[in-house]
Length: 107
Image (cartoon, rainbow, N blue to C red; front, top):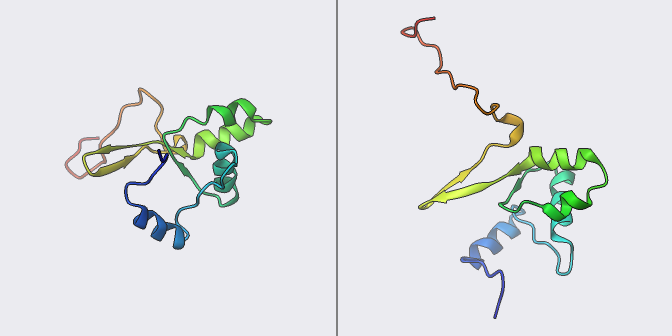
């Protein structure tokens, strides 16, 4: 039985060829590879993985902080892809969302 088979391998291959997707080398520590690749390219990680192994093996506190700030979880609603905002741009929990000011909005 095959594992980790893409639903649309031709689309995945096209993204790889354009440099938009990177595959983890066979036998590599996938958590470490993904985090290192994102760090080196000043990128974000879009994954629903919690990276528990990486966090448990992190040698410096800043490594965990960096991962938390650059990790984007996601979900699908039907065909709609909905990523979460990275923690660095999220409002604190419980902070009310204020509507933008307009000419009709009382101060």
